[in-house]
Every structure is written in C-alpha cells, then in structure tokens.
Image (tube, rainbow, N blue to C red; front, side):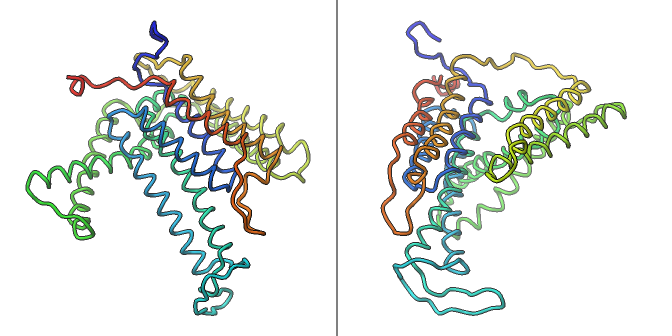
Length: 362
C-alpha cells in the first residue's frame, strides 16, 4: 500500500482473480433472473476495463462476450426448432414437422422463448466471468501457483486458456499488417482472407511456446517409485469420487446426511493428500513469488461474498432469483443478491492496477 492509501501498481496474484471470477460464476449459476445476470456481466466488464493490463490475453474479454451472445442465439434457435413449447401468450405458429420422437418448429409462446433466452443468458454470464478471469489473471503467473502434483495438468490448462488471447492477438496482428499494405475490407469476405493468416500465426506462436516450455523443462516426466505412483493415483481417484458424491449429496435434498458435506470434506482431504504425495517427486524453483496480501484477500473475498449473498437470497426468498413465467411477470430485484453482486465490483476500485509498460508511459 502507498502512503496515501491507494495501492501501488503491481500484478495481483492470479489465484485471487480466479477465486473472484469463480465466485461470481457460481452466483450466476444459481439464478435465472435476467436483471441479476446482466448485473453480473456488467460487474465483470467493469472490473476488466478498470484493472486489465496491456497483455494480449487482456484484450480477449470481448471474445468471451461474443461467445456468450452466440450461446444465447443458439439456445433460442434450438428452442424454436426442437424445444418444449409452453406458455399462454402465443406469438407465431410455424409449420410443424413430425419426426419419430420429435417435432420440429410448431407454435411459439412468449414464455418458452423467454425461458430459453434466460437459460442462454445464464450460460453467457458464466462464460463472461471465466473470460474476465482469463483477461485479468496472467496465465504464466498462474502456472507458477499451481501445486507441484498438478504441474503437468496445470501446464495443459494454462496452454488451453491462452488459446483465445493468442487468437485475439493474432487477429489484431493480421489486421494491422493488412492495413499497412492498404488492404481494407470488412464483412464475410474479409473474414475469409483473414482466417488463414490468423490460423498460421496462431500455430507458429503455439510452436514457439511449446519449444520455449520444452527448453525450460516443462512437460518432462519425473521418475517416481511404483508405490508412490499407486498411492497418488488411489488417493486422488478415491478423493475425486468422494468429492463427486458429496457434491451430489449437497444438491440432492433427499440424500442421506452423510452423503453431503462430510463426504465432500473427506474427498477433498484425500485429493489434497494425493497432491502432497505426488508433489514430493516434482522439484521446481520459483523466482520472485507473487505475494498474497490485503488486495488479494479483498478481491477473492468479494467474489465469495457474491456467492454467499445469492445463496442467502435463495434461502430467504428464492422466488426473487427466478424469472416468473407462470404467470408471466417482470423479474424482481432482490436486494440481498444485488448487494452481493455490487460487492463483487469492489476490485475495480480497491485492487491495484497492473504496472504500465515503460514504452506506454513514455
């Protein structure tokens, strides 16, 4: 912290951004209220605009927004084609085609279309939250924070989450190159001309990344004894099975009490033990570890509070979290859930900004 109380520019711990984003995504997954979902997307966009850096992956957030809009459109189109038609307010009656076990098209109702759009919006909001974490968290720093036992899995995940940022950067590089040559044009015809250079540039950058990681020892196989491998595999598999059963028990109210939180805690404990046993065989050094200080707690805590507020709203007044369809009515504005989502916007004002590159500051 600076003397005036404003945080000094620095890179925030990537795990804090992911905890914040996952908390916001979990809050979105618990509601079908379009007002809350749009508020969550607005909060994610506000934080990204306020705290993103100049790295290539920071400019990929709009790709996730576009993907979310595409998901909403596809969800509505699927409802029109093969969805379950219900409601009282009939909009149109399309010619129906009866096939074995399914009916295409048919009458369209306002309630059905609205339900499909809200379901698509919920998935789009979750995608936007994950995109916000991808835009704010440095994937290379995230790889350093992955536990040693998950090093190989973490390497694959980090490479996977950097595909979209690299694709966005390649599109901009190709568009700049075309502009310098005096080649303009927009629309579908320009997409066909840009797609091949973008694909080639993305593959070249991926090969360079793979070569750089291979030269630094990433992806190497570590010699490990048979007993250690079996113990790691057994603990991890049993732990994952226990965590899955515990999660099912929490979601299913008719499940026995033991198949719930106790099973989930035991499964997570076995998974942690498996990671500890497997991590003993992986030796690596980290230069200049990312600190976990007060800003990290604020960012991670704001995301967790958003989830807690929505869960509390589901306990106190669950009707406010859903879009009323029968009878059709405007969505409510539950104050507790709104307050939780607004708390998730605090990182836009309290989190430190990323350092400005020297070239941009000059």
